Amino acid sequence: MAQDRLVIFDTTLRDGEQSPGASMTREEKVRIAKMLERMGVDVIEAGFAIASVGDFESVKAVAEAVSESTVCSLSRAGAQDIDRAAEALKPAKQGRIHTFIATSPIHMQYKLRMQPDDVVERAVSAVKHARNLVGDVEFSCEDASRSEFDFLCRIIEQVIDAGASTINLPDTVGYGEPGEYGELIRRLITTIPNADKAIFSVHCHNDLGLAVANSLSAVMNGARQVECTINGLGERAGNASLEEIVMAVRTRRDVFPVDVGIDTTQIVPTSRLVSSITGFPVQPNKAIVGANAFAHESGIHQDGVLKHRETYEIMRAQDVGWHTNKLVLGKHSGRAAFKARLEALGIEVAHQGALDLAFTRFKELADKKHEIFDEDLQALMSDVQPGDKPQRYQLQTLEAVSRSGFKPRSDILLSIDGESHSVSAEGDGPVDAAFKALESAVNSGAKLELYSVNAITQGTDSQGEVQVRLAKNGRIVNGNGADTDIIVASVKAYLDALNLLELDNARAHPQREGV
Image (cartoon, rainbow, N blue to C red; front, side):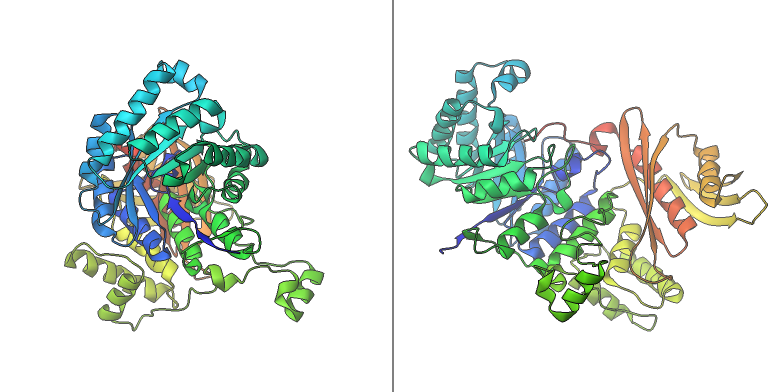
């Protein structure tokens, strides 16, 4: 069977960031983008340039950092949006503007308050304007799965004539069903006269748990680009999961007439990086990247796997990046080896001072934890390179006491705007006491919505990675912290969340619209 190329379009940095509390700094976006580039992702949607100054700078930074993948910015179908996207993409070796407008009757009537003829005119004008600025333009029919077929044919034919080389048909609200959605793609490709002049793409949301199934059905019916995210991250119930799309196509080559240019061994490391940065843990039973994805509890299954792996495993764990976190450094490793490993992981250190601080922290960690893995280095660098996050609150020292029969207590020396404050509190446990001590000084008024602890690597000396989710006045932020001492990690995570709350509302969650 002839194998067409399936374009993998990753929107973790744009749609993934629309998950409540999943905002990322510019430096964090660049780190993820470089991992996606290493994986071989074809298109990286870096953000929504006009949404905020911070998002513009993030798109620009990714465009400067990435050379092998196409870098894309989303924009509404308006000249101001498109101009801003083009400006952010100027440094890109390969840039794409992704412009969109809603095409379903309900969206046109109630959101846009526009007549269908006006929507077509706006779309064509936007594509022509974008095409004058960049050579690669994608057009999306927002809410395509609830749009009228004849109207889709009309608008798509005209935007292709206007210069769009990719046509995206999003299942914006996760309403599609695989058979129905795949048939929609097939009918559009066979009906639209100039369909052969564009790649047809899909972008599926997971509200009914069908995002991957809908995407794969579309591929079987002629779609040759899939928009997806690492770990299925995204607004509401999330998006189609990149790792599931890629491995389904790779594993079932006998079914899918496409192949992808993805280095699958980078899947698990990238999944872990995204989880660490966003504060969204991967569920253990998540396909491909969950901790239990290749674990066998049943004695019958274990016996079969030991005798012949393929009795119960259709993929090899190492093919997606499991079991590759080999020991890389130790307490006797030097600065050159440390810097070389960071470079191998795609981590760029901004200046010599940052490298010196990171190396000092590495040595401190190596004294506590004999074996240092790649995941430890990723967590360490997240801690020492806060980037454009505000650092109003910083931990100086912590003493926590927990003894049977006595009330746990935490004493903290905290820096607020550069001034030291000593705070203490008792609680139901040392973590509760520490959080109460922090609030006695900060009085944030935020509500703790989530407290989660995960081991970064194996072993009792593993670093603990803590995620703290705070909510205040309708805003949600996720703070992260890592340390071999779980109480210290918890305080770091809480302070990280408090610092994120210091960001203005537009920066913390810039994107309110998208496909």
